[in-house]
Image 1 (cartoon, rainbow over the protein chains, first blue to last red):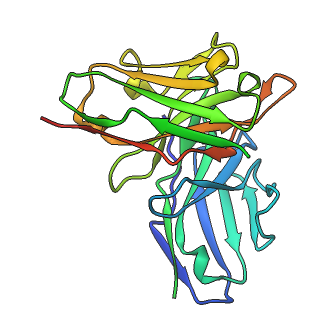
Image 2 (cartoon, rainbow over the protein chains, first blue to last red):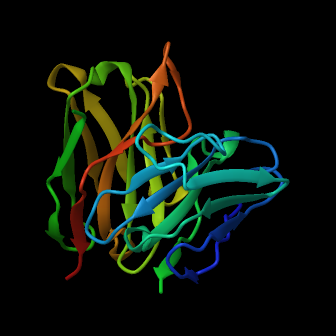
Length: 112
Length: 123
């Protein structure tokens, strides 16, 4: 089964922008435009930030944006704020192999 | 307001069984696909299982097939995960999550999550 690879950590100062990458195989990210991103603070429920590659749910600030090129999806957070410090997970539909979803390993965002 | 509340976690010995429950409110439960997602200590999120609105389609990650069973009771707005033959590697926080569903068709993300319930498999 294919995997989604994320950097273990990224960091940025308040007001700066950071981008978190999510790289997969061609039979997952290259085929499906079903990439979602979740923000996870410790001991809290994960929160949906982006779905279908670049769609933002209501209530999510427009500082958060998503994109995809080939086998790599990206989450960009602009105008970093202290409360953005959390783990971020990408997720993609895995296709007919499992009819389920595949998560990346997660990226810890530190706001310096 | 959509709410998902998990319960049933605890300490269980290897080879043992446990049944997790997830109570849903704030939406018409019977209209939605539902899922279980877990997070082992110090690890990332892992999708575990999905179930269709009527329960007739169920899908699992390979590592739990034959041991964990997802089910639902639409009359009680409840989702379940029956966990048998538990292993140490099943130790995790288990989250119940809603899958957006429109006109009967599922989406491929999770829009609401519960707070999770901890399952510890250890002797």
